[in-house]
Image 1 (cartoon, rainbow, N blue to C red):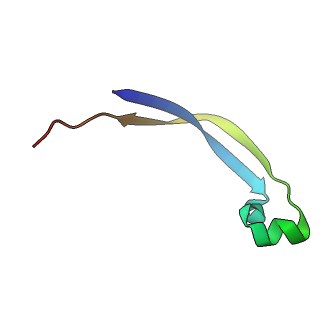
Image 2: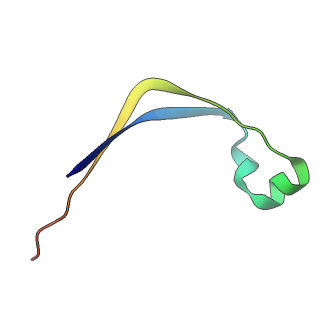
Length: 49
């Protein structure tokens, strides 16, 4: 079993900068931070049916 803990991220601006058509023409910047709350994800292989 794999268990992962990832902090929540908050982006203040710059959400559209991941589109190539946008950042090739306008450039891009992102301001983000994390908070002290986490998301836990677990993954395991299921037995055959």
